[in-house]
Amino acid sequence: MYKVRTYNAIAPAGLSRFDSAKYAVGPEQAQPDALLLRSHKLAVEEITPGLRAIARAGAGVNNVPVEVCSEQGVVVFNTPGANANSVKELVLTALLLASRDVVGGIGYVRSLADVADEVELNRLVEAEKKKYKGRELIGKTLGVVGLGAIGSMVARAALDLGMNVLGFDPALSVDAAWRLPAEVERMQDLPTLFSRSDYVTLHVPQIPETVGMINAESLQAFKPGSVLLNFARQPIVDAGALETALKDGRLGRYVADFPVPGLLDDDRVMLTPHLGASTDEAEENCAVMAANQLVRFLETGSIVNSVNFPSVSLEAVDGYRLAVSNRNVPGMLGQVTSVLADREINVIDLINKSRDEVAYNLIDLSAAPDDGLLQALRAIDSVIDVRVITGH
Image 1 (cartoon, one colour):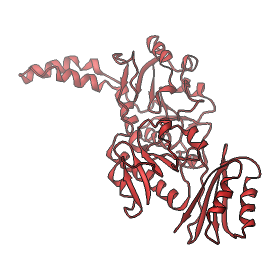
Image 2 (tube, rainbow, N blue to C red):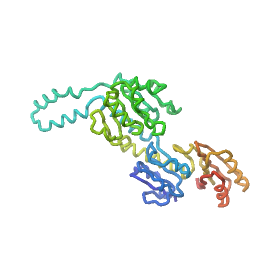
Image 3 (cartoon, helix red, strand yellow):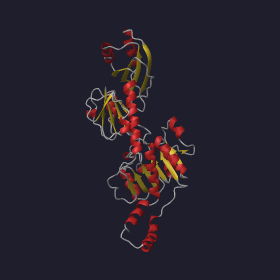
């Protein structure tokens, strides 16, 4: 019986992916094999002995101590793309609200609640509506920074609205390139994209290289009066530089999903309370994807969408399988297979992959591994973890 400890409210559609005959699932599970969470800030102490995997129902994993997990052989999963449509729709909302003062107009109309005469109401509305005039998106230029699952969807939607779209992503994958509409003009550097864009939207992960990407220097390249949208992560934008750019008119508006002290009452700023993935559909998609990844990993050892381990897939067969994780140093696979050969255990199938400092192996055996074999494998220097998988 596998034990999965949950944090936060996980959508029932995701929880239903765990067969009750094989899994005990819930927030009360002690010494779990896996964790399933959304926004819970995971403490290092919660990485308990015997933990094999953590699945984050969402794209970002800044609430998980990934480096500690890697050191202890714990595979960390996320769910890229599962909430992409939800975020895309919020970005489109932000584009429209940044272009026309719909929020201000609604507030003004509500302020007229005491006006009972329809003629007088219409007179007031017609007299004041010019205060809320905006501009159309058609023909304007949107710069998309980050062309992954969300960025490519935003780019396509902007094209459908009649906008010109520029894109920048130095780490664009082959799969992402196939998803990207041909009409998106790829930029070779950010300053050029900033200088040509009426609107800039950020869709990059929060990693050391992107923290503070939007700073005093980069903001100097922005077209005066342009709009910056941040539905990625707050630390990507330097708050002090942002405030200065708004004051001097370099930025006309800032729209983001992350409230920032000091900007909450600025009329040029619109901030939402982290609503990017807050739709029923996104929560369900993320929960199902995360649960499926845990089930596949626990039952077969295969890994997909991990942020710290390589992608590894080996077709499930009847028999015995070893999942061995180790530090990525030379000669490790040879040492592992030598231990098997010394015990005259035949290897039926094997796959070995590495990622940064970690390597991972799935090995199908002709005979059941005994405790002596497992002890010998765990005794190899630089082996992090050895797991036996049966009944697959």
